[in-house]
Image 1: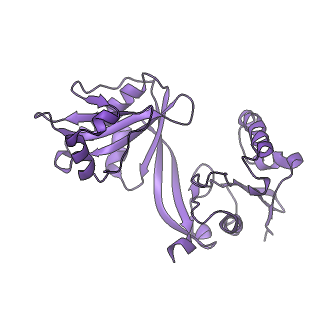
Image 2: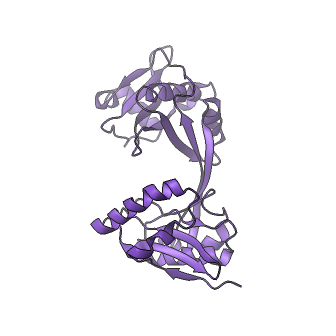
Image 3: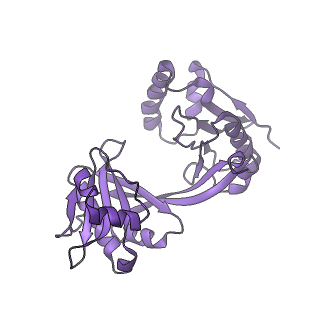
Length: 273
């Protein structure tokens, strides 16, 4: 039986944090960035955690300075459940009350039980997709209406936002709002596209389609239009949806998006008491 310890590296042993990364080129890029962030105070060294056993490094995790950024722990593929619990417990004790923990299948075993044993509660499961925007063309919707804040303020757009449960949605700088109309020129579906935090990557927001217009392919057309417009300025798109949202998953797949990861989202149990 392994004995697990939680360690915080020094600046001199920071390379241990990347012991489980499979790509040396990526490590060579990330290590100087992490050193710089620690030196500038953007990352606290005590929030860089290493799970170790007699076998060596079993897991790693970084708690970002931004509380809205989830923790994505990385584990050895054959890590024992006790090891997952040990690191998850350390994260629960160190992270802010609102911090999320995410198990992603290319970083960690998708097993909720060891994380729940550390005092976390599974909230939902997401699937992530990527789209190479230059690999294929996507059809534009000829009568789509596009705009920014002024389009958002139109009474018919505001009414549809409210119907879709997004009355508080606000246009953001650099984003474009897209409305698809019906034959009477009334908006029946809304989406938006804009820049991601990753250079060259776009974000899409499938705000939704009017309940009376669903099941007619309008979501697939809207998604394709957003991809086509995003391809004018970006090379890639990354997005996701709930694992049980089979309709959106079919839209991703119809439009050439590739399933790249499955994620489990957890919150500390104390938030739910």
